Picture 1 (tube, one colour):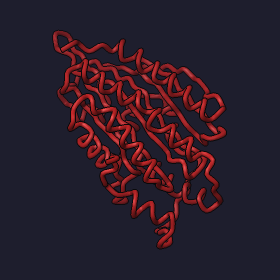
Picture 2 (cartoon, rainbow, N blue to C red; picture 1 turned 90 degrees about the horizontal axis):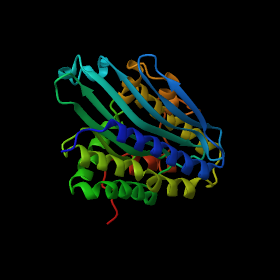
Picture 3 (cartoon, rainbow, N blue to C red; picture 1 turned 120 degrees about the horizontal axis):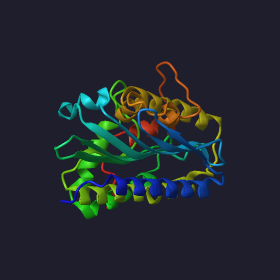
Picture 4 (tube, helix red, strand yellow; picture 1 turned 120 degrees about the vertical axis):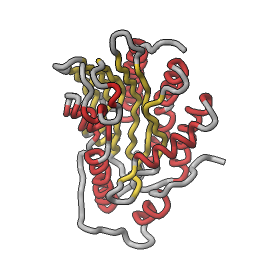
Length: 303
């Protein structure tokens, strides 16, 4: 097993960020803002953001590399054996909120964590995944996204996709609403069981597959006609996205507790959101179909 190489991971993450931003800029026609930032406690990052684009109402593709002497509470609680170790965490995290309600929101994240102590072997792991959140579901789009996730993992083991899909279904679930956030995808964390080289290669495959998984969906839906009704429902469903990120998401909590840049962490929030008291869609409507046909755990793979 090769030793962990944070420098190699960082170089790939920066390249991944640049490639994804370029693909999204090509799709939108408007450039992303670029802002470098530093963290007083150690490290920093590069935020890439678009707002009020031609296609993307808001989107961010952020790179961060932060470090410290003591783990944030959210991490220390789950890994108490790492207390007192120096640590560093790096990753690329993105969220894209298209303007068109027929184009789904998407999230992707790939990250690497390592903790070191004098005279001890480093403790490290990878995490990541991607998931799709439609407002008006489309079976073809959903199957394409899940097939892309499957194909990214297939070279690394026949059981990984089913395992990581189930993990995604369980993780991106609003317990207080008793409903999934979207149609899922894949999610993994604390992954080091294959050794560094294979774990890194698997994570690269996931990150590198994002453009293929999402861009065809965005390009197919960005010009679909819509009206005030669809925008209103999109804003209502975006409220679920906000609820999950602020109540349940471990990455948001880790970022805030570790002294990350708040603007970059909260770039995942959609720009226009609505809440209503005890609202339910009209029976038989396209809005009702999202709940009955898409916000359910099912096998979406092409057969």
